[in-house]
Structures are given as structure tokens and as C-alpha cells.
Amino acid sequence: MKTFPLTTPLCVALLFAAASTQEPLAERLQQLIENEIQSMQTPERRLRVEAEGLTSFYSTWNGQGTWLPLRVMLRTGGETELGLTDEQKQRLSFLYKDNEMGVEFLRKMHQEQAPELMRVIEMQQAARIPDDPHFERATEEQKNAYREADMAMNTLALSAMQGAVVETLTPEQMLQVRKLEMQLMPAMGIPFPSMFDPLGLTEEQKKEMEKITDAMKAEFEPLIMETAAHKAEWIAAVFGSLQGKTFASYDEYQKNSMEMFRQYVPSEASRKKSADLQERGTKLVTLLQNRLMNVLTDEQLDKMQKIMDEMPEFAKQMLAQSKARQEEQKKSQTYTPSPDSWRPGMPMPVQFKEERKGRFPRVE
Image (cartoon, rainbow, N blue to C red):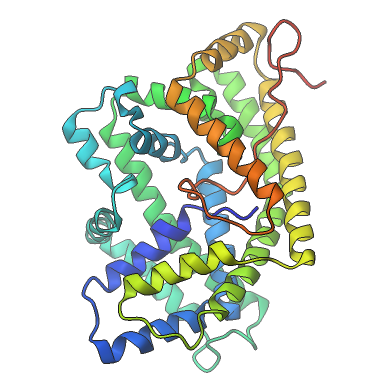
């Protein structure tokens, strides 16, 4: 699972950018970059990656993934499907415009949530070990405290994004977004109960779906942690290749780091590990989706099939491109980040095959 979760470009890169909106003096720039390169190779970084992975996991699990399909729409011209006004597009521009829009959004969020932000910063400072910045002597309790603080920081940004989406869209537009979530479910990763809102779930069905997701959380969490740790290893390897290089600007450094990711060739053991994580993730996602769909009635399954058949053209193109990229990456040892690398790192499940008069298959 080698795609970048959204927390990396928006919650980490933008938080860094927000803290350094002014380009530092030339004599200080290289030292700042060297410090960041070194931090990417430390045990502390592994903890941060684990926190990012869990934050993304929990935000999706709690039904906070609405901005994901919406970002697809905004980046592919699909906003016409929603009938967004110019004012709505401006308010949501942080989802698809350049980093400056995201920096401004997070700065505004920080101002509005200053007390909570200060509490999280205090948590982070309290969790650090003053004489051991790399956590080499940290206890498991101290590591968990640091991980919890970092998760809280990322959750602030994710919650703010979700809140901005809900406040901006009308109820009718939100329902359209939920339909798109359902249509993009094969590429969205872990499903969540509110994704099925367009089917008119009863209260009993909603409660049953919540029970199913709660019961499976314990099965997903170890996989998320293991995937995050594996990701941290190859991030450390990539940034190790940047050690000792000089850069004229922070933008140049970012471009070089992305180029290193494109050129990175994992070892045979790393590739096998990635394949194993992908397979295990696919099985869990497939199992969860099947269990959730088993709650649906035949009429709701028919309605779901109709919604899938009405998938807009931009969504079809997005899924086709995603599938083509996956097939291409299978042939190559080199990982190439895609324009949509913000997506969750789950592979596309394959259980959506027409069976029994075109309905989605039930699993007894």
C-alpha cells in the first residue's frame, strides 16, 4: 500500500508551510532542510507516520471521508454535477487549489480553534523526552503519549475540513456526494455506514452497520499500524538519498524529494511486504463491505445497483485511470506517485461483479 494518505500533503506539509510562510534567509535555509531530512529518518518519524495512518483510518471510519469524493469532483470538473455556486467553490478551494489555499485554511482554523490547538501542542511537548529526541530510550507509554498527541493535531485539521464541507453544501448536495462515495467505493478504501444514506436506511439498519464496523475495528488497527511502520521505512530510505545535497529554495527541495520518491526502487523483501499488506487489506475491506451490504434489503440492493449504473462520466474516467495505474505499477519495480495520491492507501476491492440478475453479491 504505497499511496500517500491525505494527512501527508495537507496535514503535515501544510502545517510545515503554515509555520514557515516566509522563505528563511539563505544561510538558514540549508540548516532547516537538513534538520527536516534528518527528522524523516528517526524513530520519531515512525511514530508520526503511525499517527497519520491512524488519523486517516479513524476519520474515514467515522464517516468523515466526505471531502474525498468531493475533491475528485473539484479536480476533474465534476462540480457541475453538484451545481456549486462560485461562493461554494471558493469556500472549498482548499481541497484542490495550491498549497497557499490550504495554508490559509489551516491558519484560519488555528485561529478559530486556538484553545484546543494549544492543548494539543502542550500534549506534544509533554510527550517528548527532553534528552532523547529520537525516542531511542522511550517507554511504550511515552511512545503512546506522543502518538496520541500527534494524532490529535492531525485530527484537528481533518475535522476542520469535514466541518467546512458540511457547512458549505446544502442537504441535497450532500446526498449527491454520498452517492458519489458509493459509486467510488471500490477506490475509496474502507467503507462507512453513512455512505449508504442514499438507500434510505432504517434506524435498525444503521445500528446494525455500526455494530459491524465497531466489531471489525480491532482487525483493521494492527494492519494500519504495520502498514504505517513499513511506509516509514521507505520514507527514511528516500530522505536518506537527499542527505548532503544543497537546495536554493524550499520549493526546490520539495521537487527533489518527490523525484526521489519516483525513482525509489524497493528491495525484494520490501516489495513482498507491500504485496502482503495489500492482500490482507483487500481481504478485510472486502469482508467489511460484504457484511455491510448483507444488512441491505433486496430493494436497497437494486437501488444501489441503479446508482452505480448512473455513475457520472468523470467518475468512470477516474476509476479507469486508477485501475490502469495499478496495472502499470504491477509491471514496474518503481513506485510513481499519481495525481490522486491523496487517496487512502487501500487497493481496489474486486467483489463488485454482477451476479444474480445484476445485483451485488451477498455473502452468507
